Image (cartoon, rainbow, N blue to C red; front, side, top):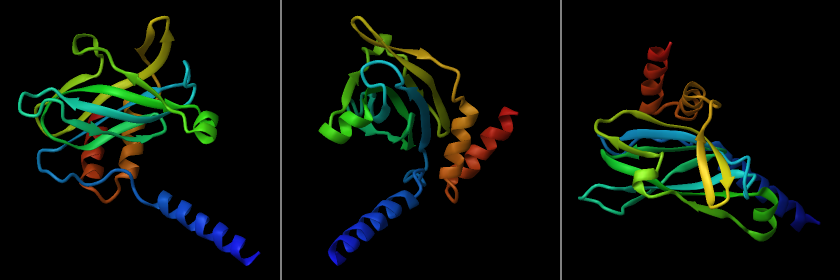
Length: 180
């Protein structure tokens, strides 16, 4: 019985300690940008949550370099992106039960550059919003349609809360003041 209490206590400590760290960190470079957006996977084969996203560099200097985004529910962001040209390469989602029971995730490859709605260029350090999107399954794959909620302000407020004590907190506060 004591062994079970110890295991349960250990699991609780690990769970709580994993939830206590902040998600938004200080950048490691002076020319870094914060890139963010949202994908609602409420429809389609996942009917679940965004679990991962990769952004690929399109620059001649660093072609094919991948950057993994931080995910929080449908929000995706990267808080240390160097200047350059990029596009979202792919994203992953999962249904809670399928992942819990079978470890299944679904991976969606974004369309080629010319048809990719999430291609962008970071010319100067700053904060870049890639949009709020709704996932829709179609006959030959999927589409991402612009969505209204959560909006840019809501996402920035959440990022500012998660970035307390970082340079991003004050930079996001400045952006929010200008949005009024």
